Amino acid sequence: MRQVRAASIVPLVRNLGLFFSIILLIFTAVIAGQFPTAEEPYITALSSKYYYEKGRDLVQGLSQNVTDETLQTLLRAGLPALAVNAGEPAAAQRGKSLLRISLNTLSGVRLDDPLTYLKSEIPMMEVTPATADTYDETGPDEILEDPADGQLPGGSAPETDGAAGVVLPVENRVQSDTPLIALYNTHTSETFELTDGLAHLKGKAGGIALVTREIKKVIEEEYGIPVVYSDKLHDTSFNKSYAESEKTVKQLLEGNPDLEMLFDIHRDGAVTREQSLVTIHGQQVARILIIVGTDARADHPGWRENLDFARKIAAKMDNMYPGLSRGITTKEGRYHQQYSPRALLVEIGSAKNATDEAIASGRLFANVVVAVLNDMASPENKISNEVN
Image 1 (tube, one colour):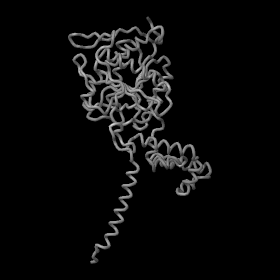
Image 2 (cartoon, one colour):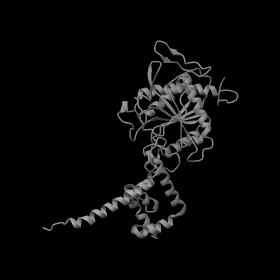
Image 3 (cartoon, helix red, strand yellow):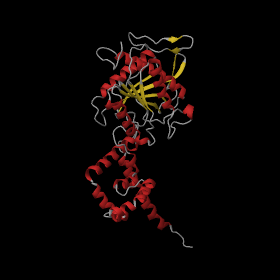
Image 4 (cartoon, helix red, strand yellow):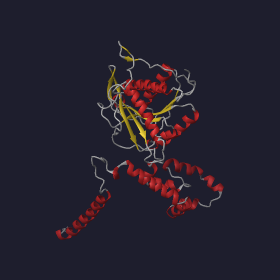
């Protein structure tokens, strides 16, 4: 048996050490200046935003600088199937249609679309959002504006049934034959861990849909104000959920021209149970956070109008149910709020709540929304179809 001499191992160890030193040096250079700090708690190169920007640049570069013909020419050199397919008579190509359909179904690759080849080898191209609205930022939400302490000047607490502690409906001065409020869920599968044991019900509607239906029910049955709710499942592919809900938003606005308010109802996922729970009139309910998109990533010149509307909702919530609001935060995405100055993303509770706690909060939120709608009913800002 041949013996391995120590002298022959030394060069191998030295070369391996040199190799790993180079890798370490490159890695250090890549993330230099990107280590977590109190101001920037996330490593940019490992965040979803980093990959969003890199993926966007890659896709834009391909779409702007490389034509389909160029890609097909390059791919034919390595994929004979493309070269054989090119120039075939129409009848021969029709004869292979079943094969193409099978290939597309099984692999996601289309012979007539070169970008699908790249997407099959570079998964990030497939999951990278197509717009500035189609991904969620990671980490806890930083509160921009904290809820107010106590009652607002001139405000009054809502009446309650002293025996049961149940909050009675607010006085309503608005009537309409057409929907004034629209509701939808970008992340329809979001649910509540204390009830369902997990945070998402993959492929079907979760507890957040029940909360949204309760909001619709209260506004319609207690106040007689029509509400339109899209229960479409938008997050079968989570990374495309905002792209899908954008279609719904456009349909809601086009089909309901009298809409005054548009709410995308979510639940938070990054806060503790203690942070997402409050007792209102003796009942434990989920706290509510309002999110406003900005123009940081894409054109949204009117985002401050959405912020003003968020402040009206938050102030009314503080006035009616102190402690219910977690405040207001802004994020870089637009979240379809560019389509309406009174569109907001509303997070009711977190994954750590029970569904019943969030539903109870949804009832209170419905009262708040109607109260704000009544405040808007004035000669200067008249509600559609209002009856005084």
